Amino acid sequence: MRRAALAVLLMSGVTGCATMSHSVKYEQLDASSGAYVQDETKPDAYPGFLAAEGNIYSCRYGIHHQSREEFEPPKAEVFAKLMAKHQPTATSRRVVLQRFDVYYNHRLKALGTGTAAAGGAVGGAVGATIQSSGQSAAAVNRDVFTFKKIVIDPDPLRKQDATEHWVGCDDEHEGEYSARTVSGGSDVVVTWLQFTIDGTPYHFRSFYQFQPEKQGDVEAAIAAAVALTIEGISPRIAK
Image 1 (cartoon, rainbow, N blue to C red):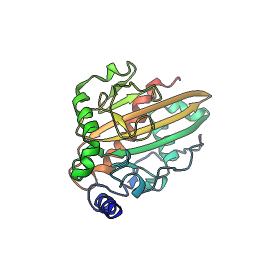
Image 2 (tube, rainbow, N blue to C red):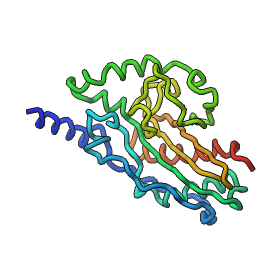
Image 3 (cartoon, helix red, strand yellow):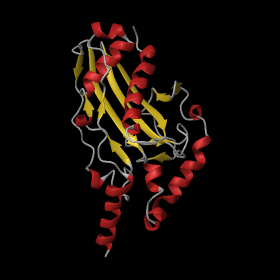
């Protein structure tokens, strides 16, 4: 009986509040070469749909990881061309890309459509998250800054405050976000970038809030989040 109930919950994720693919195409990138970037990113290791994004009992429920196959051109090329656009001096330096991960977090919305049984298990955390949403990002990390429509954290591996509630898995460094940094209710694109330039390390995580209203809005938001992140961090890169 329990297995049957779980199967129903998992299938509700597949057919209802979760989406398995969001292919993002960057059609207007500059034609310049991205060969100056050395790609050392790791292979995708996010759990499968039924174990994570589509599993209502998982802390990854409602959080989609953008796979390598969902980017066109490849992520390293996207990074290289956007970096060349916003920080042209980087093209003459040694750039090593170590991490470029993008997550689409619609967990709060997904949980709102869950069953009563599942809601009982997660409702307290969600309620606490929403209650804390009005607190300032500065209260979490003074270095967090806003650029246009995006929040950027230049210290993404900081120790998590014990009183802080995250929408997603605590301290997994994936697609979770703090309601102190991002106000509750919206879908959020979480972007991780880690790289070195001439041996100097850089590590950033960004949060882009939006409300999808029509087909294609999610893909457009992911593209915008990545572009704004690289534009926003470029002034912080030593020239």
